[in-house]
Amino acid sequence: MKPITRKEYYLAKAAGTYTGPTPPPVLREDYYLATLSGDYSGNCPAPVTRIERYMSAAAGLTSYVPYPVTRIEMYWYAIAKGTGYVPEPVTREEHFLYEIITAGPKYIDKIAEGSLILLTDSAEAPLTALTVYGHSTQDGTPSPDNPVPIVSAGDNGEINVSVSDGGTQSQTLTLSTPGGLPGIPVTSDGNYTDESGQQWVCDEIDLARGKLIKRVGKTVVDGANIKFEADSAGSFRNLPRYSSPGIKYDASIQSTYFPFTVFHENKPYEFIWTSPNLMSSYFSTVNELNQFCTEMNDMGQPVTLYYTLDTPIETDLPAEEIAAYKALHTYTPNTTVSNDAEAWMEVGYKATP
Image (cartoon, rainbow, N blue to C red; front, side):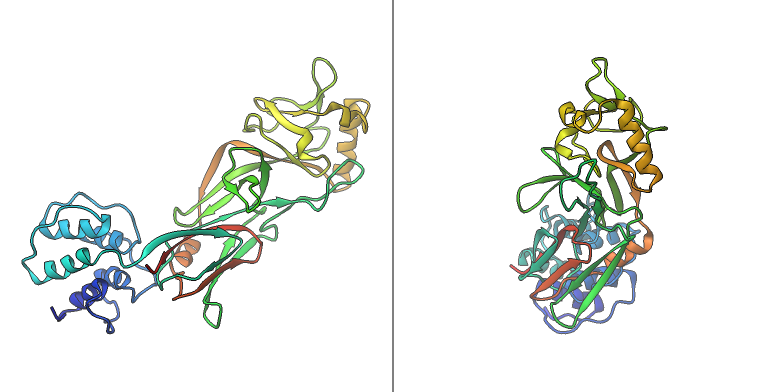
């Protein structure tokens, strides 16, 4: 069936029965239909009406759809969800919608991850997801005699994500990261696993959900307000309960002055040294350790500890960052996704079958 109206051109393009140009979107529904047809990758209005919710979900922009009531809603439900009963088509619009349903998926949804992501099967379509994971590194093994700074992704206050075709076309998304986007190595229960198999607990920016999820806490031991105490046996040195509320039970610690393998938390809301012999090689009493912390803090080189939060903290991302994310799209057939902080990423995209 040859398309006549604006809507029919979009629907025929989405069904693959028409390959020519479609009109630029003007009406609210046009934006969803143009995205569905693959001819538009910009911002779309938030869906308001029931039919807009179906169209938005069918275009991969949102996920929620109400249960269908009318005949036309049954068609749109089947397109958006990939399943569902549809009656035999009667009207012209129903025939075009039926062609989309019977044509099957035009693209395959895929996920790729890494700090540099090369997509060789991408379609020109909006991203379906983008999450940026932080991490913290140290150039060497720290000790009281040899402190090693902890460097986190986005320490300079921002991370710039680039999406390009590997040639002249590119797009950039700037993410604000005040305080950086830290991540610490753990033996289990991480939210990211790197290429070597090492698990990490990382702060993450989930653009699809519009959330910053903080999973890593930070404490500065100044030897006065926050200081170490000896346990009842006098051998272990630890921070007192609630000095850093929210510490996850049995979680490794990353420190500027001590290896994370000898220091962890094994009581609720307490840091515990697991290798007192190593500590006693540097400090004979807990008072000496606290004096050391005070001196380092006064010199501007504080004893800093990064730890896993018992409960992640979620905050909303700025509206401008979400809008910029929604404008990103992949290219056909190759797309490169990178960032300037060597942060890990997870990208959802539409691939060609």
